[in-house]
Each structure stands twice: as structure tokens, then as C-alpha cells.
Image (cartoon, rainbow, N blue to C red; front, side, top):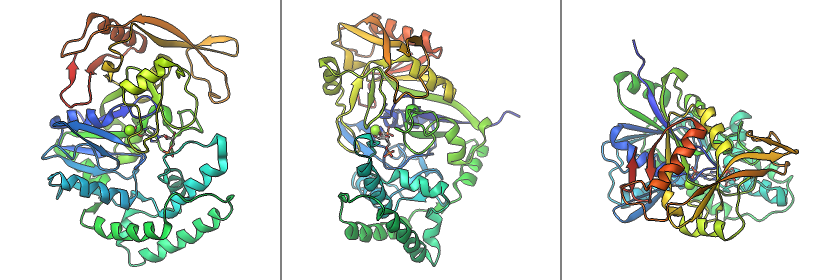
Length: 422
Ligand code: IMO
Ligand code: MG
């Protein structure tokens, strides 16, 4: 008998591809949306009814009535951020009761994890990761170091003791770092943290792997929502300038507890150009007026940290690599409208490094001086309104031919209605 499958949405670049919008747009076809990795380093923006909303931890299906939302086991949760987000959602009049469940196995970001993130970044100086300062790295490090604190622990009688034990260990470690500035009031945050932990208890803490698999068996259509992007993947991204989880379709299996054979469609989201926040290699980065136009037209400022995003041309070898890693079945191109006025566009089709031309990102992408090899493509120079201009169609086909996967969907604005299906 054919196995029932779930579909996946994930980012193919360095994050901020527009995953939130896509999940929101696709959700009417699904009954359950599940986040499988990352934490509040994510900032998923949704725009509808002339209003916008940024989600960090809650799955982007929350604004569609009748959708169940699951925070999976490989998500890391800061209770303060989660509960803040929930009160904002409820202030919008959205009824979240009975629509959000949290994996017992998800790890908790402690205030000391945030402090460790700050200490580590500050100590690294110029070579810092440029993290979101949400404590992501230290929390995952504790998880793999087998010293983490999990959502299920909240329900244990000795939760406070477990917390204190970890806090003390963290403080010892923090003491090893050179002096640094703590970007928040620790005692205040800790107090809020414990309040938020109490408030979290109104949501069911569950064995989400059993829950999701049972739903799959029943034929409930499920969408898994990725955070960050393929080039930020801990194994295959531009290490060490990456995040601390697997952002690929394989991450869905370990992040939700489903078998590889259960993965159905893989929607790969990418922008018609590239952006990156934080430090690390970015071969097609533009430091000129074109880069500035992308930033201004595309409002490329971080949804989580407000940092200006680095901008550059589309990088096809990197895109093809990401498509390969996740077995992408459907491509979705975002923010095409940002380049409406451009007379000419460029796309990288290869790199030159070590005196050679290649289509492969180097192992040492951080230390190699990589020079992109560009192909110029004429711009469409008109507004996209419900129909794909001929020149944009040519740009799309150029990408499809290179990558070998169809672009099924083109987004030409932030609103949930500004889309063309191909
Ligand atoms: P969404 O889900 C863009 C980047 C940070 C930094 C690196 C490591 O909105 O696409 P971390 O705090 O994870 O330890 O930071 O990863 N980063 C993101 N960049 N979008 C994101 O999420 C990101 N989440 C993390 O800027 O370079
Ligand atoms: Mg984002």
C-alpha cells in the first residue's frame, strides 16, 4: 500500500527566502503545520489584509482557521519569546486554543544560553558568526552534549533543580570568556522566563512524533515548515558561518520523528536574488548601488534583529547544490518584483577559484577568494501584475534549465495574494 506522506517547505539560500508567506499561502490545503528545527532565530513574515506579522517559533499556519500547529522535537524554544508571540497572536483575535501543541522533546533556551551566545560572539571579535543572539548555538550544543533541558522537564517536580544545575555549569563557562556586555538584564529575564514557562503549560506537551505519525496514518495533510536556509545547514552550509541545526529535508525526519519514505513534496523557496545576514561567504554579494537597490526595494532588513541584509545576485551553483541536498520537487521564486526596474540582471553560473572554473562551492568557502562567473540576462522592466512578463519568463526558464527542477510559483509582492502559479 502506498505510504501517506507529508510535504515540506524549506529555504534554499541563507534564510529569509519567504518561507512564512509560502506556508501561509499553502496552508488552506493542509490541516497541520509543523516546525521541525531552529528556534527564535527565525523571523517568518506574513502579510495579509494590509497588515504584517512576524512569527519566530509558532508555525506559520496559525493564522488559518482550523489548522493545527506543532512545534517539533528539534525546535529550540525560548519560553519568553514564545509566550510574547502567542499574546500578540491572540491580540489579533486569533483563537489559538486547541491549535498548538509542543513536543516534550524540544529543548529549552535558557537565559544563560543567550548570555553564552553573547559571550562567544564577543570573544570571537571580527570572526564572529553574526548570530541572532537568541542562544541558538549554546542550546543545540547542550542538546548534543547531552546536558539540555527539555519541554517535558517542565512537568518534573525537580524542574527548578535541573535548571539551577545547568545554570551553574553555564556560569562557570561564561566566566572563562573575556569580559563582555550582556545585552539584557539577566535577573529580569530569568524572572520572565519562569513566568513564561508557567504560561506555556496551557498548551499540551506531547510526544509529537507519535502525534504526527498518527495524523499521517489518518490521512491528515501535513506541511513541515523549515527555518533558516540550506546554506546555513550545520553540515552542508558555509561552515562555521551557519546555524546549529539541519535545515534540509532530511532534518524533517529527525525533527519530527518521521521516516524518510514519508517525505512527499519538497517545496524549495528562493529569492530571485540572494541575501544573507551575519558573517560568512557570499560569492555574489554586491557592494554597489545595485546591492543598495535590492536592499531598499526588497526591504532587506532582518525580521528578527533589524540588521540590514547583505544583498547580491542569484547564485545558481549554490541553488543547485541546495536542490540536490533536499531533493526539491517544486521551486518557488520569491520577490521577483524587487528587480522590476532593472535593465539587466546577472546570475552566477560558476565560480573561479584556485585558478580554476567550477560549479561547486569549495569546502573552504570561507578562506577561498571566490569570483563568480556571471551570465547577463535582460530585465523585464515592467510591473508584474498577475501575469509573467516575457523577459521574466526567460529568466525563470534559465534558472529551471540550470537547476533541473520546475519553478511552480512566482511571488511578486509580500501579500498572500500576490502570486502566479505556473
Ligand atoms: P529565517 O527562518 C536568516 C543566521 C544568523 C547567523 C547564523 C547563525 O527567518 O530564514 P544563529 O542565531 O542561528 O546561531 O545564527 O544564521 N540566521 C538566519 N539568517 N534567516 C534566518 O531565519 C536565520 N536564522 C539564523 O544571521 O548568520
Ligand atoms: Mg526571516
